[in-house]
Length: 163
Image (cartoon, rainbow, N blue to C red; front, top):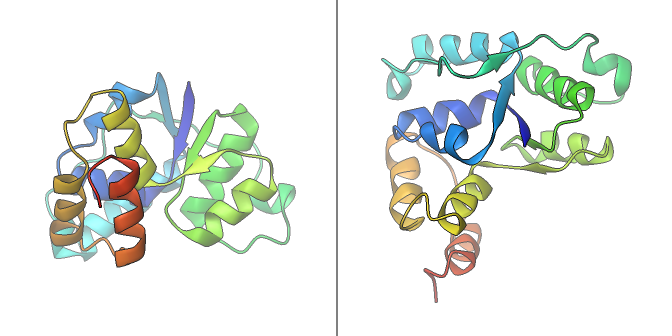
């Protein structure tokens, strides 16, 4: 399975020291160099990410054309744009993007997309992790990952951990 991920997925999983989930769940994980650059910039700018390192096993690849050539109507940040352009070019099985606007663009281009919460659900389904709830709590506390109560309750029910 070929997966392309955006910056936020790497930052948040690294913040809770669970970036290994990506390499354990998916055969090949790609990111454009712009994603790594945004990661490094966030590590320098935000104390909650201080000391994190971009995973060395991620396959860095520049997309051959910018997202603006594929979707001139799309207005996304540079990392998201590059990740979606690369996913389109590679014919990726999945593109990991947490922002709703980025997922909407990816879907409009015919890509299957998901966010970090889907990664956690996949990990539980494949018995790579025992429970989703503690990781969501860590994401919210350590990475300051914003999540509505409604979404959190839905994900926990999907994981078989909610009411």
